[in-house]
Length: 167
Image (cartoon, rainbow, N blue to C red; front, top):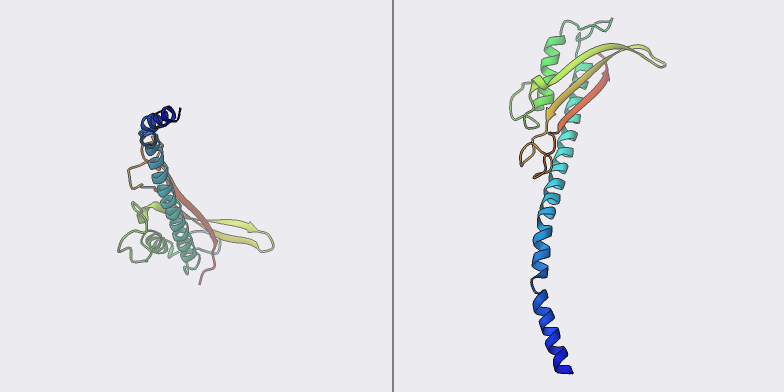
């Protein structure tokens, strides 16, 4: 009896020798998509954070630009020059507009600014500057966030409001 069970055990092991390799081959594409998807999602979150900080810097610059806004919340004498500097600040991290952009495909033309009068509780009327910027997310492996899946391209955008302070 012991001889038969030894032969049975040996035969079972030989039949199962390739099972782990087949299971790995089946699971490998899903693992690869999951790893690359997590990597791209992390990059997208990082770029969204960078874009939000850049928009906040541009709005802060505009809110402190002297004579950029008139007393009745209209565009002032230095509005155009201030918009150019703030847009360069958003795109390149400096007012000169030189160097590498903070994000791939980000340009100063992607930023826009507006000013409007708002009623602020306890403060009366205030001029509020809105900075908005939008840029498509460029993934490492193409236009999609998760490789090998046909998903729509992702657009990153940020909108920041800042009360105008002037000088």
